[in-house]
Image (tube, rainbow, N blue to C red; front, side, top):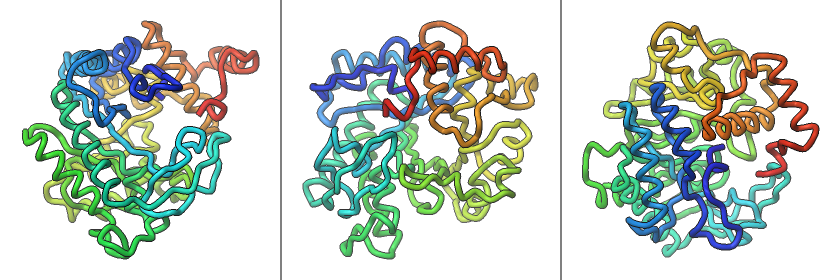
Length: 358
């Protein structure tokens, strides 16, 4: 969602993903209200430790931390999960094509990564970590969920390799993560720099990361479709999985994200995990964490959007970010009048539905 508050150049890749002042403003507001924020940052593998991009990330980190919050940057590689119009020759663990169309986009058949590809990917993540460290970030989060490249190695459905990076052994399928970890620590040996990973519950493995964030789903198969009714009632969609694996973790801080709305459910989840993640609720109420901690709110507002309308939910969250980035207050989408304004804007072409722009 926040990528719409950064630069984009259709022709020059190096000019994409530079934080705009509006994005800096969004993280300043979140940090003021006691939210630990992670973002999907864009760090080219040869980005210098100087210049406009570096200064913009430095300003973002400075503003996000000035009231005492941490800022941990989420970094990803899409692998096969990139529209064919952007990358007609993607790489992945294997040559398994993403068959489903997402947001009207199709995806090219990837080629299995070779030795040079592994070096490039590992060096890219390590460079991003060093870049973020020097820009003032508190840590890096590898995005190993939602069907991106790391997830493609962890999943048996996309990893058909028979070498040291594949097979039935989770240690083999997680080898890329281990090698990225070693490369990051070689470049950023500071133990205070947080190394974390977000993983799909079903492909979870427990070595070398603090903290882990438990999530689920990919472009092809949403993890939320298979959530048990018992978990839905508890709001934390992946808490039952967390309960199963947390006892085996000795040096890892684990967070869970997905579905949490009430303070009670968050408190209940914290009996198992070390932290909880908030996504869309925090775009509607930037001060939600502060209100919950102060005891002045029992949970997030009830937004008048159907649970199964993911496109509209993401579109409205992006709108809220734009409003706050421009020093305005987010719409109260628990109010029918505000929802009508939003629906009228979409109907009149003033807002573009999410699935037509991804």
